[in-house]
Image 1 (cartoon, protein in one colour):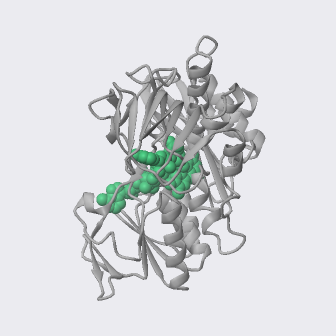
Image 2 (tube, helix red, strand yellow):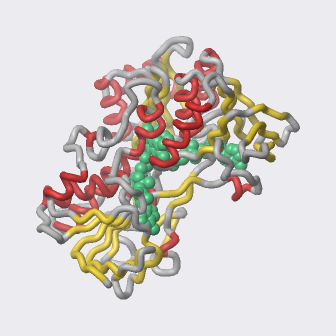
Length: 426
Ligand code: FDA
Ligand code: NAD
């Protein structure tokens, strides 16, 4: 059995939702577009899973955070897809792709063919097993990538009020989940191998600002070591975590956030890969002209840096998806994707934004015992990155605009003296 569509979006996450919106804005006919997703629900704003979804009260639940609510656009509920004649093939994993024949084979045995394919398969969470630790399948060990994972964390929290959670990993998932666990009155210990949290982005000074805040909320940090094994009881539940430094931590639940791998498997050997993702050009088009890739799975040229990057953030997923659809529907009118990398997070009552690249020398500014801090990164004489915690809308817009302009910086001391004022006057 089989079906044929002009456009197929493979993956039903953030990028898929924004791509669908863009397709309708540019005009697709009834039955021309289909989205195939392993998840059983229509595309939703994944960032909600570590934030509003885990709140003890007024928690976010679908349908309130279907895409594209995060961008103050329409909220795309299943009804919306129906009204726009878009076929949602949910709860369906694609198990192989044949780019020469332009077909996808689903796990249910259906062949779906396309004229143009938009790959939006995102990424999967890395498992502890990949680092030689067993026990990930214990009922109180949680990862966080999709709705099912978020429900599992929620249930685990409910089952151990006032209990102990061990958070493995000091990146985005670790930091955001630790904050949510604390808000739910769970005692949190964070364990990660680096010298400070958010090592991929934060400087030691920025990291210690957040770590101090977390400590004031009762979080314990154990740094420079990793998990070596779990103690598991006869019910199959983890009761303690053993660390490589020899310590033993009693645990009622464990949350693991140790990074991701892009879902490229279907296309290995068929499309050119780079930086772990599907390599695309400035139109988000892969090495096969009928296939575009967007979001976490795509490695695209970032004009501002003059090199190809794979970004793992929601703004990049939303914008790359929209640009790819523009390039598909109106190739003559659509230029190259010119993206300013933008990352953000919200934890407790804190909120930060980062634009650009975190390379070169760093200049910090602001009151590190107060609520507004910031930093600039200067590389080869140009400002290339900006970070701000606790800014206003106008201030965030100013650091974004300044980073995009990439101004020449002659005097780092002067930049430090001016601090946020520099971005506000550029
Ligand atoms: P996404 O992962 O959203 O979607 C991929 C989809 O493809 C899934 O539906 C998956 O099931 C499907 N799929 C994969 N393989 C398939 C197959 N073979 N067959 C069928 N379907 C398949 N970013 C940020 O900037 N700020 C933030 O605050 C957060 N917060 C945040 C919280 C949490 C908990 C997570 C997990 C992630 C974030 N992020 C974030 C990152 C952000 O959510 C991420 O960059 C985007 O979701 C990427 O969108 P994609 O559409 O590329 O992948
Ligand atoms: P990450 O790359 O941010 O952090 C991974 C962390 O894992 C590292 O900081 C390190 O501390 C730790 N680690 C690595 N190997 C380890 C090991 N063997 N044992 C213990 N710890 C180890 O990845 P993540 O936090 O898992 O996040 C997953 C994805 O979700 C990322 O793509 C991230 O961008 C995305 N996300 C983004 C946001 C946001 O942008 N606000 C929020 C949540 C998730």
